[in-house]
Amino acid sequence: MPSLNDSVVLLTGGATGIGRAIALDMAAAGATVAIGDTNIDDGQRTVEEILSAGGKASFRSCDVAESEQVTALVNGAVADFGQLDVLVNDAGISGGSRRLHELGIDAWDRTIAVNLRGTFLCARAAIPHLLRRPRSAMVNIASTYGIIGAPMAPSYCASKGGIVNLTRQLAVDYSPDGLRVNAICPGYIDTDMGGGRASLPPTERAAAQARREANAALQPIGRQAQALEVARVATFLASDEASFMTGSIVTVDGGCTATYRHGS
Image (cartoon, rainbow, N blue to C red):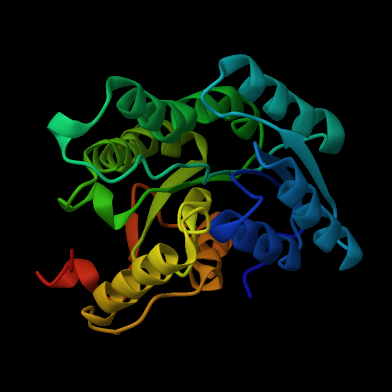
């Protein structure tokens, strides 16, 4: 396992799903993990699990679309642990399932605000602290939907595509100063972003899960990934093992972007 000993990681979206898996994996690699999320109960449970395993962690409630909350999150992490070595921008929402002309303006704005503006705000607040460290890293969680067109997801595709190219741009500006910036594009991962499926009636929930599994089966590896399979890549990118990687857009997608069979 790559080592993150003596590193302090700030992770948004660490309460559930991929973010939770990243928090646990980075803590297991030796990192101190500061988590921000709007999901207070699950965020605190993630921290408790890290603490019970002998690690160090903290939690603060934070809506990454709100500048003041982001500033408080970053400053709080530095106040708690004295430094910041890694930023992981994982917080995100799905944006619903509609074609563009059917999508409300408020729904569009909220998806862009959380996914893209949130990444911008967290990066802007964290970079001054990251630059104080001799070697630092940022890992942005984008999506395969940020590098391909996907059905019924205009705001999500736009927001994640923005994250992809923002990652490249930040790498250009900050890598000369020792801050590496990379992004991960997950494909079909066995999580329920925002609890969307869980909120459906049982029959609809089962149908939605079946559609997702059927689409994942079309990919070369032929299954969904577990969140830990993404987390392991994030831990690697945050560590010195990835010391010559910056501006990289790393797909963890079972090969789905290597073929035209993307499902529906």
